[in-house]
Image 1 (spheres, rainbow, N blue to C red):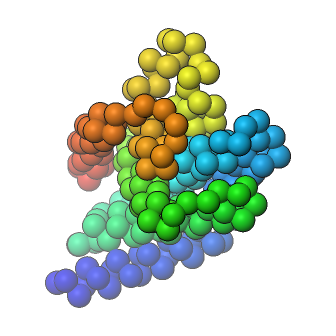
Image 2 (cartoon, one colour):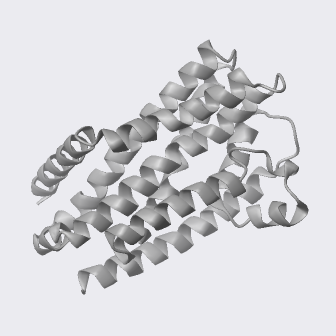
Length: 248
């Protein structure tokens, strides 16, 4: 039984990677947009000497958000519309392999996007960090992928392909802009600063900034607790959407 699941997982993962490689319209924006934005704001118009370090933490969250939301939201919705998901669900033991393969593919592209930004930060932006800090920051950014994976799954299980594209774009841009990934939220009006506390991007970027040792007071336990609660709520919503899909 385990060998069958493993074999199914390997085949699904290979198919996911092959599908991604055949879609340059997904790869280039996913890998190129975060590093382009980081290079613009951290190198070309730095503004202050702290910008490259600060933006490394926030744009790392931005880098992992795209592959998760678009890779799941639009991809799953497309497969639902074409009937592929129904076919996969009809086959025994493939449900786990289907989700696990997409998670594996998403983590791979997220990690690749992070490596590109880290290389630019270290060699072009002059960011110097101890090796343990680099490793902890990378771990933090990779773990930040999972709440967005759940959001992507919810979108993919509920909406059709056309709606999923629009909703994924709105969520992606809103989370990035209002969560403080592009502009520090201390520059926002007070009402927008309060609203940011309801977004996972704000809390994940604050955790990354804490790991980086960026200036400012941050309650790490508070941010971790909020992310844990948000993740549990998203997991419950994903499970509900998955059950509705299976019973469809």
